[in-house]
Amino acid sequence: IHARVCSPNVDKGGQPLNLDTLPIGVPIDDPEVRRAAAVLRVMHGLELQQLQVNINHVINELQSLTADPKTDSRLGRVGR
Image 1 (cartoon, rainbow, N blue to C red):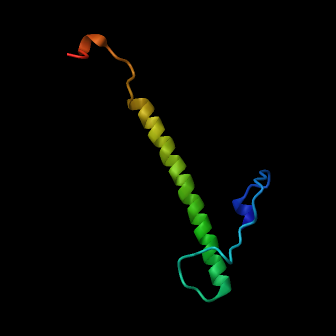
Image 2: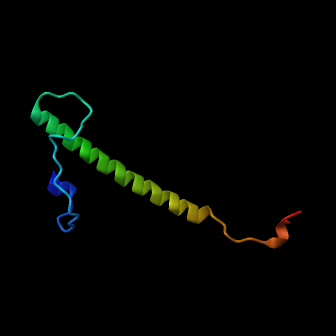
Image 3: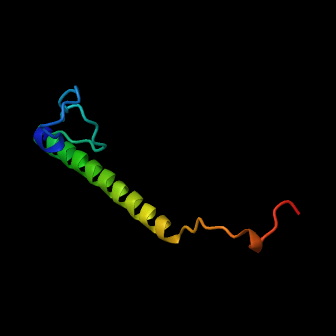
């Protein structure tokens, strides 16, 4: 899982992810099933992170289309 989650070219100085101590939120006795659940949880978190990045990108694109920074001082009065 470490090779799939972490890019080999990036050295962040961190430690490898220990799947045995990762909280998975479900009581599981079998260590292999627990590790598989931990892998799925990590992968799901990464997918949610990428989804949030994509949503933010779409919001930025929509705001660039709908924002109108042009102002016309003839249309309104300020301070009256």
